[in-house]
Length: 160
Image (tube, rainbow, N blue to C red; front, side, top):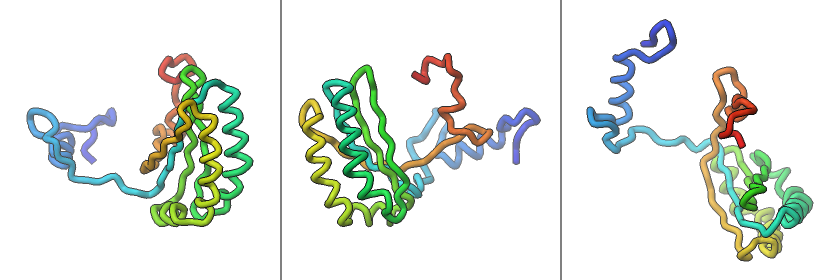
C-alpha cells in the first residue's frame, strides 16, 4: 500500500482516494461512487419524558413486556436504551442482523404483539407520541479493536 513509514497516506494514495470519492480540486464534487452496505438494521423508538421516574416506568414496561417477545427472533441483535438526564430524551434501539431478519420482524406476529405495548408506553411521553426511525447500524472500533467510545479519556468533555 502507498503509506509512508509513519502510516500516513502518500500523495498518490490521496489522489486515488479523491478520484474514488468524486473529489475535484475545489473539494468534494458532490458525487459518491459507493453505497453504505446494509448488514445490520436498528429501529429507534424515541420520545421525551417529564422526569426520570417516567423513564424508569418505560424501562419496566419495555423490558418486562416487549423484550421477551423479541429476544428469540431470528437475527435479533439486542435492545439498548439511551436516556439523557439533562433533557429527558428517551430512546430504545432494537437491532437485527441482516435486512431479511429486519423485514421479517416488521411483518411478524411478535411486532404485532409489541405494538400495543408501545401504544401503552405513549402515556409516559410528554406529548403522548413516540417516533420511530430505521437506521443502517455499524459498529466502529479503535485501531486496537476496542469500541470507539471506550477509547475516550475519562476527562474528555465530549464523552459526557
